[in-house]
Length: 155
Image 1 (cartoon, rainbow, N blue to C red):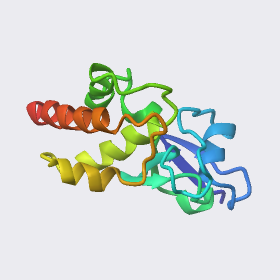
Image 2: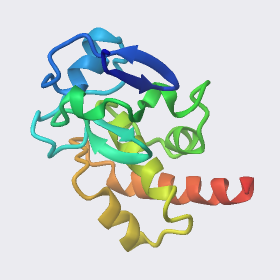
Image 3: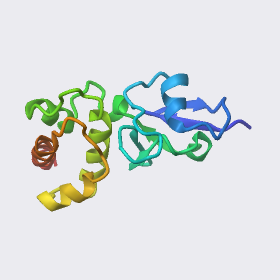
Image 4: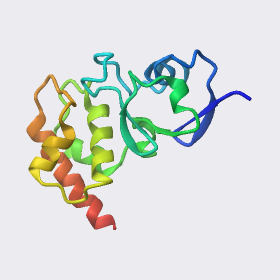
């Protein structure tokens, strides 16, 4: 029986070498191009997705290791791109070049799922390792705090 992977709620067969990085399976086979290639070593965070709800660097995870797990990409975070984090990103003018933003948002979403009322230092620690070449870190922090507030209102 062939292995499958569930991405954004849809099951797909793993029809490639199981050692292929999940990033390339997502981008090249499934055409989920919101997940970006940055460093290829799991150090920059541009390729961050969720694996069973946990922020994970897809560039260093073999697709075979993700078999049977629930994968969420930026495209699956919300149906219409209206997740509170995505809205907060826009409202706080976070994106400049935009390249790191999907990974930043995915890491922040996983973090907020476990810490609904983060302090500035909580955010700094959680987002450590997600690199933004444009240096929008203060706006990222402000957007995360804004999204945390909006998410708390939804509960």
